[in-house]
Amino acid sequence: MTRVSLFIAYKTHPGKRADLLRAMEKYVKPEVDKNPGVLAFFICTDDKDPDTVRLFELYADRAAIDAVGKAPWLAAYNAAIKPLLAQPGEVAFATQSWQKSG
Image 1: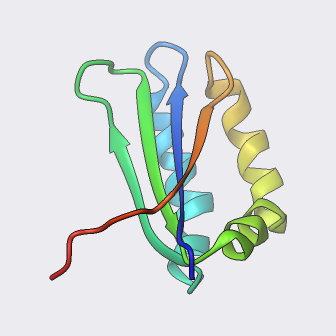
Image 2 (image 1 turned 90 degrees about the horizontal axis):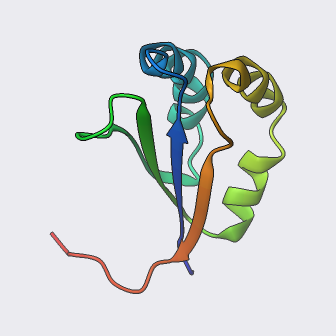
């Protein structure tokens, strides 16, 4: 099984980071919590930029990440966050090659 990682950086309009975090809490968290294909999901605030949120997501395989990309809730989430963003999210995919055990 090849795990797949997704990194997303969201840059919000000034002062809108808290609104973005609330949208993630509403739309993303309940879906991630019940999805066994999502192995890890981190929502992080950038220490140097008060208007940036960074996500790290780890999926069991490519099929799991593709399923999330096609999930019905994703359209509502994207519509909710679009007015908060200063620019589109910066997305990067990566294939896991090593992990710390234990």
